[in-house]
Amino acid sequence: MTDEAPDGEYDAWLDSIEADEGYYLECENGHGWLPPRRVCPQCHDRDLSREPLPDSGEIASHTTITVPTPQFEDDAPYVTAVADFGPVSATGIVRGVDPADVAIGDVVGLEVGERATTGDRLVVFRPR
Image (cartoon, rainbow, N blue to C red; front, side):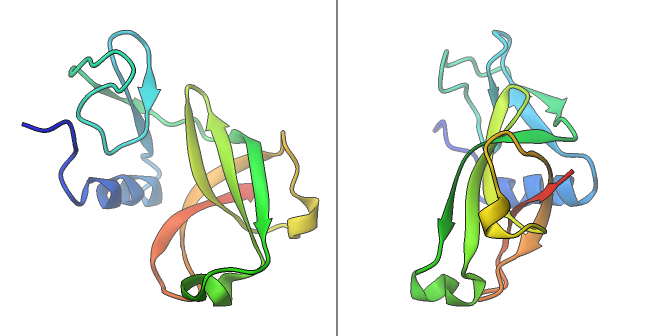
């Protein structure tokens, strides 16, 4: 058995966010992680429980992409950010605000959106 989660678990996690049932995984030692995971990368505990994902988080880091790779050209300019949601951090695209106005500490919600170029689903942060 590998420590990797089965294919499709990330999609199932995105589905849970769309259903307003977002969650993170937590081991018995209190380490939190986003799926897909089968084992805690910090302590190697395999007993992971689902915990409700907080409704809002704070942007911890961000960068604005103005010259994207070809597969994301219709999305530019866009802001990629890392936001802290309680014990876990998520990476996503910030929407609903001018890229120049995004700042560390901004409070955001998490939802699922689509890339303009490819139509692929992705994590989206929107200001709260």
